[in-house]
Amino acid sequence: MPFKAGVWPIPKARVKLPEPATSDYIIPNNATASSSAIEETIIGSFDDGTTEDFTIYEVDPDNYVTVSLSVLDSGYYSPKKLYISINSSTGSSNYYKAGVQKSINIDPKDTTLEMAFAITNSTGTDTSARLIVEVDDGSNTTVLYDYHGQLVPTWKKISMDVSSLAGTFTLRIYFYHIYAPGVTTNISLDEIKLLRPTTPYVYDNETTAFWKPTTSNSGEWIYVDAGAPKIISGLRVYWGSNVPNAFTVEVSTDATNWTPVYKQKSPPQPNSWQEIGFYATYARYIRIYLDDQGANPVEIGEVQYYSSLVERVASEHGHGSGPEPWMRGANVRLRYVSKFANIQSRISSLQRDLQKSRTVNVKHVQELTGIVQDLKELVKLLHMS
Ligand SMILES: [Ca+2]
Ligand SMILES: [Ca+2]
Image (cartoon, rainbow, N blue to C red; front, side, top):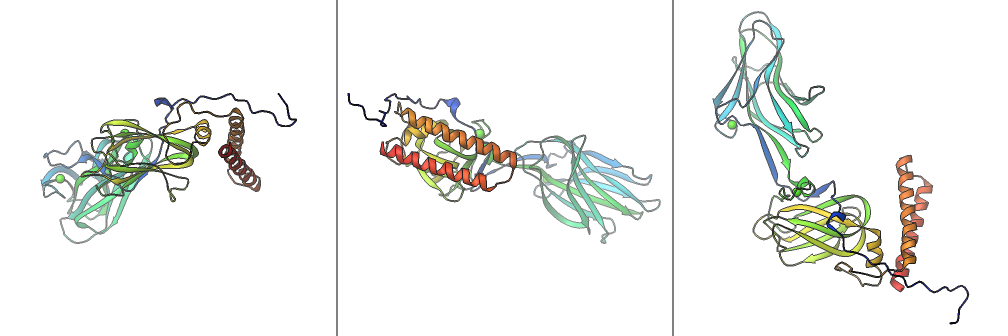
């Protein structure tokens, strides 16, 4: 067989690529949605007529101060409220700090502590009032809300950010005040609850907890974040009881510009996993766009993605464009795999370097430009072969 110098035949060895196994899918650790149904954990509604484990919290009151707790009618939304009465009826002016406390659990998915309060006194005239809401984990106290102002004779609803807190805490709601004797101060509390958007339920590795948009309108969406741009070629979705009539899977590197990679115009199987393979693409965000939700807001239990360099080589190796099913036993020439391995190692090295230096310099930009150039050349080669 004639042999031309410099042109070595490409080895015909093939790499057989398996479909991803269930364990190959990656659970993202972040998601964003067009809207998110909210779940509530009630800490105190007092509608059953009890103080619901709230007890009196009293720090250094003088001898003339008495604090009492009761559940009275005329709640914020519903019939009953918690009523704290602080009475400094005799003695001299002094300051006191008194209120209620209760042990609560804040779940990592909880984002907001919400409640309504009112402050009145026996004179009915305005004085300076101070209400503080705090949580204490035994070693640290976090002040969530600090009201300092006039009396609050009508209900005031407040929302406090607890997204950075998780665990068991003592919740304290107390009044902190310097006040003249002979006056009773009354604090009303109601509808104390933790709020939890359902968005994180798509990556909690639990198929019974779902993300749900707040409406059943077309055009609601949720995307997961792969954390960094990756080569992504598949999705594994757990659908709940309410499935869409039509949806599109889209990818993006910036969460602004979206490219569709898969479209389905029929309902997926309810209460089950669906695996969706598509033409491998370089992306960081993967979005499920609900073209038609049907009658009820769709429930999505989990969204996982599949990322692999080799899959990209396979799917770009002359298999056309657009959405593609998994490339069962697709063929890949070994030299392209090795070129890809080389690019992958350069990306990893750049990533390490960036993490170490924490700032981007000219060298990094040059290396990134080089990597992109090599990737472009390789993609061209693959399409030609
Ligand atoms: Ca109530
Ligand atoms: Ca879930």
